[in-house]
Amino acid sequence: MNLEQIINEINKDLDDTQDNGDLIGWINRCMDDLSPIAKKEAKTVYEISSLNGYDLPEDLLEIALVLVNGTQYDPVVLNDSWSTGYKRWGNVLSLQNAPSDGQVELYYFKRLSHLENLEDVPEIEPTFHDLFILYTIAHQQFSEDEPERQMDALTRYNNRNGEFNRFVMANSFVYNSQRQITDVWW
Image (tube, rainbow, N blue to C red; front, side, top):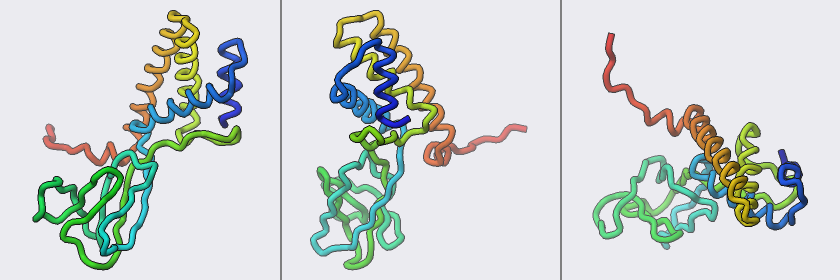
């Protein structure tokens, strides 16, 4: 579904036509709510600079991996001045004990892109586009002081959100690569 179709479904379920701006606001808040679950992967590359300050992408949610000339750098605490690694302060990445030239590859999980145009399509699997409808209806019902309908929609959203979480975990290399077999019983 694109944004226009999502808005049409919301209006149909509410039996009313709501302001598109309000609905888009709720839909984009749902995007923010789903971002930590969706774990959308992104990558950016920086040339190593003597300034040693690399502005992190605006859509960064969580750093997954930092490679400096192909070597993995791990996070270093701010008051550590000896270890090799990277530090994050605000929206700036800096390297410690890094070479003077080459490339920094930043692999990260990004926030889901907000929908702005009616043709925009959410970045999650189409099977779960109903999450935007359920979330928006729940919050719209709350603002209209209809607690029973709001609680029903919110419960349905939370249940569906759990299904989405399980789907992502089952189909994600990130989650599955962290599973380790420690014992084998025959």
